[in-house]
Length: 295
Image (cartoon, rainbow, N blue to C red):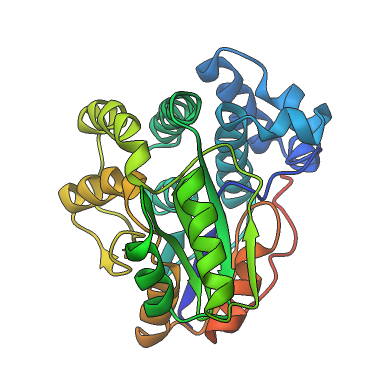
């Protein structure tokens, strides 16, 4: 049986995340306390007791989701992946789970990424919107026809593409999408234009950190966002991980390629069930993750 594990990105956070893991598993508690030391503040206090608003700050959200996923992976018995993939931020969780990046190093990169992206959001106003009911090609053509910067940012599943860019340009694209017959053009509650050229300053800042990070050959192929293809070469992993900040997340392509490579079923590791829904729409069988290691 080929098990495919997938890891969620920003937007799947919730108050109380990883609290049960912390309370039941000594291993989880140790990892989360290590994270508090690395980050320089008690992120566990925000994860366990913070409000939804507290968890929305990018510098908190991204490390929190990464921690929930990686701690759950470490505490999940029988974690034997044939392949892994992560949606946006989730790619760091996938790489850590596959042994390509050490937990501590991956957390440091996530923290740098989050802070750099937050600075971009504050510098240039941007937004994102989900376009539902049009083909990829239709959305791409609409983005090309708009003034300013707006691009397809997430190819989530057939008929669902998230666009990203300057706020006015995103609004223009939403209007054109509705005229073209989109079922919905839904603005997303995000703080900036992720996976667009507006993240270029963050890409440069993260690049310096990635270059200094040791990345090893993973224990299984990692289907990276930039190409949707399986990657095992450490240098290519670095290149793709950096390009991801300003490039689209090719999730549909990633899942279809995993299915083509004979994935028998998918398991989502982390908060929420967003990826389960997307994988089902693409045609992949889902199995729920049950139980944690408490010994």
